[in-house]
Amino acid sequence: QVQLVESGGGLVQPGGSLRLSCAASRSISSIYVMSWYRQAPGKQRELVATKTSGGLTNYADSVKGRFTISRDNAKNTVYLQMNSLKPADTAVYYCKAVVPPYEYWGQGTQVTVSS
Image (cartoon, rainbow, N blue to C red; front, side, top):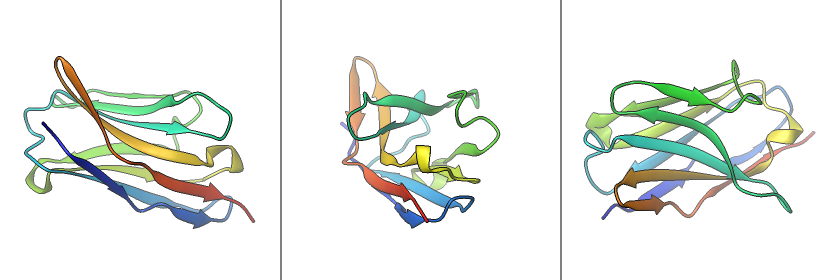
């Protein structure tokens, strides 16, 4: 079992940056897939970024070139660096860990991009 706690959300102006953190309750070095998702009001939850334990990454087209996912195994933490933020990035951001056959989710952190 894995508990995940996200932090780092907040209110930021368009063009600004935020770094989200996802702290896990156990070592993440053996967790194959760690991901960030987001859910905007009235919309379905969507994949933002994924990073495997082997270093492979995948990003949604809407965030490529602006967001970077990273894993710090020593700190049991996954990060999402978000640059050049847009109002369309406003959402609750969730961290997910896949430990087959289970999926574990954090409680989410709100990101609001507005002037």
